[in-house]
Length: 365
Image (cartoon, rainbow, N blue to C red; front, side, top):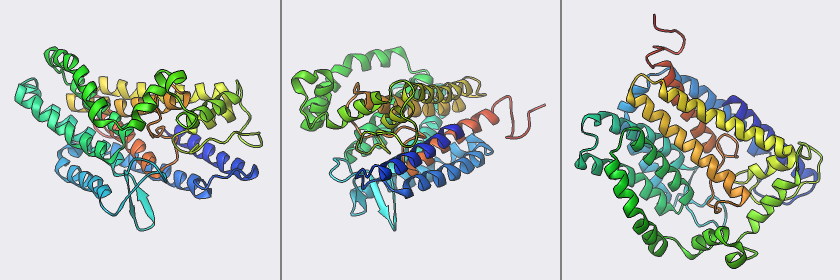
């Protein structure tokens, strides 16, 4: 985690220096971005250790405090405090308080992972009871629905992945899985005809059949990202002093394209391996957990980081639609960085308070 955070700060610093040296117009980016990222990484690392030292079971029992707070903050995006992430964006997932902006749905992710894992754990004996499954679905539908109303479809997909992963890990009956598989075409049809806007449909169609549906504007950002990603070739142009291509929001959603420019295929491969190792370690901790609650938490965090990384990298490579989602630990954004690091703290808490350990610092005898 610390390696990923340090990598992020270095990439953002490089991006600021190179943009200024080449006089690239990018009003979205300045020196405050990498400084904010460094501060968020340090704060997140400290919070990670504090959380790791605290038993995760106690965290889960406080769901009645953090779940209403995070839901309330998310609802504030529908008020005058709500802001779009970028000018002209079709989502309104940020709130402005004082001189700061934050994305409440990021904190809601953690609250949802903890509360939903606890819900599944407390109902293990009657888990596949139809009424209990209904309540679990309502539990998942509330935050997912709120995020969808914001227009933040990328984050909504991550919430759905967490919801399904924890359900599967908790032992959902194959009968429900089969039923969901039968109904899924109807759900997809309903979403396509009644929820998705024309711009969303065009983004999907342009990925599936670019020759027929893609317009210059539709894949403008993706095409620039692919050109930038490939321009670094094997070893990249170096962190400083190269002839870099401009990609909109390259410090945020499209930072992977800048990694390709500066560090080439080797740098991209190294970053993918780093994120993959983090995800595998999370799953490993879940498998070694002393109870189902710890296992569900780890599975939820894994689903969040893995799916978000997959969608972000796929977006840069042009194999998934542009849905506005950050690369965990790497993309600029204090809220995203804090969420990712605190999530690792929860996993560490499961590890240190499992059957093998009873505290952060000492093994059980």
